[in-house]
Length: 456
Image (cartoon, rainbow, N blue to C red; front, side, top):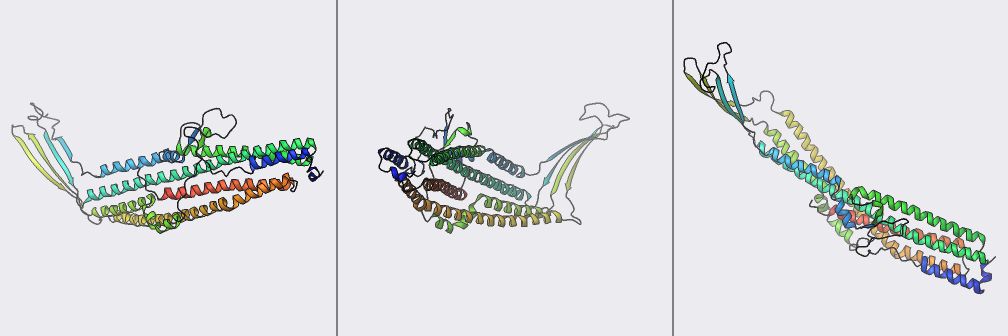
């Protein structure tokens, strides 16, 4: 049966008006998912089945703050605290050594009577020894520890940045999955209405059984897409959970659906001119630079071993004899190693090799940082252009094509196959636009996190 043969019947005109209303209001005219912020204090809901408990709305600011305090960051912070304690351990002089002795004890004849410390025939002595560090060893040791602690602090800052980048990317993946659920749910509702309308028209004899069956199949496929999208959203929430350790059940969280503001159009070009500054202020580069300086101090400390440390000491001895005479004697001591045949060449050689290694590592980190920042800039620029293309060209054209297809189908000038193709094209385009928005948000946010200064 040809649809055009019923174009003037009142019954067919009723179905035409109903289909036109569905096409213009329920699906084809659905606004672009630019996402508006929810009402403060209210959780964002998507109509998920069995969502009986209260949901928690998370913003990107909350996520980044929590990611900067997660367990990975805490582990690195403990390393920094340990490095701070190493400064105290290094910045002190050698401790004096107190020596007490009791000798010349006659086991055969005894030690005589009287008080222990005065009359007994025991050679008693007490001494004190102290090492004088030479060659500026203490300052060099403290300087190396302090530079190592600075490197540990930079590692802490770099870990905060890395964890925030992971959380930012996971958040926008989760937000994109959330918007895909809403988009596919709207499409599924529209397809369900179309399938119900087709069944009524089938009973009235306005469509063939094959077309009605095809609409049922498309409606079922749309519902399956919704279920898959819901699963993807749950997986995205569970991927975000370990990074922020937020209280509550991750499956009850909902993202605050607002995308980040875009910077000026020339932001990428302006950032390119400051690339060298961005490289040098990165925490990983600063950590490598501090370790190179610590290696330099360690090299100087190894050379300082050639300056002998002198140990000064003195003691007082007391010994009462059998005829009542008390002997009191004093001893002065000086000790120092004799560098005969070895002048710490091994320690100096190792320190020299480690110093050269630290310089090589610094250069490697610099090259890697520069390459990463260049890649982030290119990704940011490409994501901006891709998003603008979708917003200005691809998505509006896909919407116009879908609207024209809906109108042509209601007038009998287009087959169901062509209508479904136009709808699939619009659905794919809208989902790709969400992905383009998420890619831009991740690219811009990653660049901003990588180039901002952090004070833990």
